[in-house]
Amino acid sequence: MSIVPREIRAGADVITVGRAWPRSVSDDELRVRLEGRDPLGRLRAGEATLRRDASCADSGWTLRDARLTPFATDDRLPGLEGLRGDLVVHRVGRRAVVRRARDHVKVVRPDKVDTIVEAHATGALLAGRAGWGSPSAHPLPGRSGAVSLSTLPGVPLHDLGAGTDLRVVRRAWRTFAAGWPRLARPGAVDLPVHDAAAEAELTGTAVRRALTVWAPPPELRDGILARLADVRAALLTDPGDPGAPSHRDLHDKQILVGERLGLLDLDTAALAEPELDLANLHEHVLLRGQQGLWSSEAVTAGVEGVAAAAATLRVDARRMAAYRAATRLRLASIYLFRPRWAAQAQGWLAAAVHESPLMESSPAGHARLGAWRT
Image (cartoon, rainbow, N blue to C red):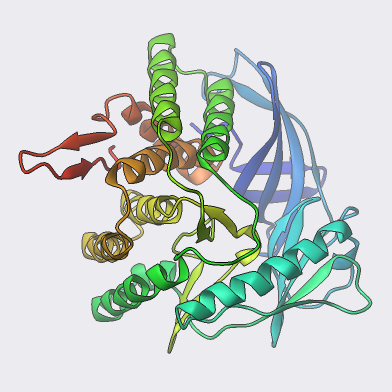
């Protein structure tokens, strides 16, 4: 059962929740940011507070209050006001994205604009190493907190994977495998560092929040926490050099497939171990299969594409296993707050308790890495 209700009402307003992000979590109160569609099909954002309620047998939480912002309006994002186009992302108080005919406009808090523009400039240099495209970014004149991102041609790899033309899917993954090692090679780039300790902290925060609101049986909770401790130890034991350029949130929706590949949302770019991005992408590929969004053939193509890139980069199988395990825990914890996937996310967290060690050795001495389980 979903902890965040599938439907949120605030006065006369109502949305069907697509995504929710925990804002604060305690034993008896949960505050979340929401994004969903109203009866007119418009994307709406808001916030809700839930309280622990033992009488609620389904989820253990009931809605205390909710606030939905008027369509395409946000007091903390002044650049969104009156911006014409198709609102495709809105995380209240944090960011919004409006699709227009010739560009996408990302709206953030005004003090974040320079960081986004600079990160996209660096990201463009990195994408260019692989012969790929990336959006150019510049502040939108006269609109505080708004950044114009050029539109790239192509279809998200996520959508291609859900299609039926496997030839196109396999070709896209071959292109990825050929280009990614050129992008991820160490070089003189000025980016913040995201090391193993930072990844361990992100994973731990996500899992602890999930366990606070889900409250599984004590034995299962202890098992998940033990798994988290194992993953943390694996990440922090003999870490690699965080010197490779990294997207830091690489997944199938960030890659566009056209005449050449395009890479989106480069404002998260950082220096990290090369295993970070490939592990994140690999687990998203397996996740699409678990969600029933991709066929087994599409999943296989993705796994093989990531493996080919990893082989060229000569990644450390031990580090890859650690980052993959961390990604599984983190994604399961994030999806726990999405009503459509909440029940599966609980299953993914429970399955983590029974996973094999982070890295086993086959008789031939090669590393064998774990996978999603249901």
